[in-house]
Length: 208
Image (cartoon, rainbow, N blue to C red; front, side, top):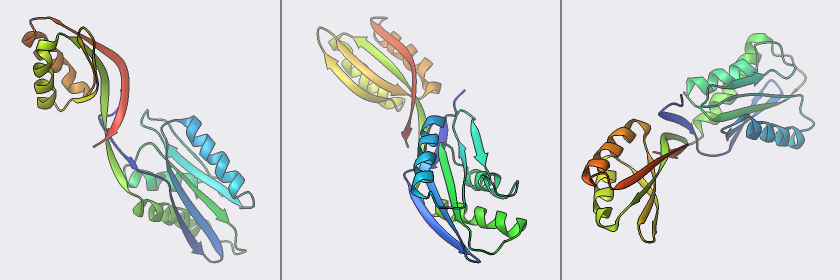
């Protein structure tokens, strides 16, 4: 079951933190599946090919999450990056922290703190957006019922994405799942059943 609402970052952002000679470059992306996350990771590894570590964490709205210490001591990098993502209550986010070792070992505690601080700093500078879950619905109806469609859509915060006119009118709409049953019931009553409403079982998140 997908969440009704999520928070994510709007776009790519980067932040650099230096700690005792080491540089921690935090990079955040908006992603919605593992494949996209892996593509971004591959790009960063190529761009910063000479870095000591490429640690990361990502969290997807399906509940999938993954993190990596990439050779750093266990528990000092990946989980700390994920902790930062969760601190901001974000989803559909990939956060990578690239480290260039500066010659001085930080110790487990300070190292974990450096990864966490780099992660929180890049998120603090990112634009956080809220996204609402919508389900796609297709409607076919006679011309004389158009006003009913628009009025009911307005009352239930339905987004009419596309309208086509032939011998009838066809609407493609995005509706919050919790409002679909009421939307269908009201339109069926208003049109005396002279309407076709198809749930496409297709979902997308739109910015609030």
